[in-house]
Length: 98
Image (cartoon, rainbow, N blue to C red; front, side, top):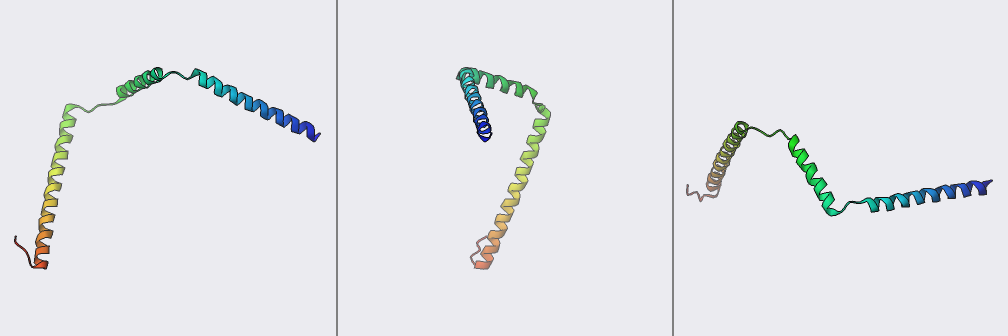
C-alpha cells in the first residue's frame, strides 16, 4: 500500500516537473526579439506620456518665480549667518578685521 502511494507521488512529481519544463521551453520559444520588445516599450512610454497632465505656462512661470525667491532668501540668510559667525569667531580669536 505504501509502495503504491510512493509510486503515485513520484509519478505526480514527474508530471509536474515535465509540465514546468514544457512551459519553460514554450516561454523560451515565444520570447520576442529585442526590436519587438523595444518597440513595445516605446509605445507604452508614449501612452503613459499622454496620460500626464502638464502644467500651463502660467503655472510654470509662477512656480519658477517662487523657486527663485526662495533661493534668494536662503542665499541671503546663509550669507548673513556666515558673516555673523565669522565676526563672532574674530572677536573670540582677537583677529577680527571686519
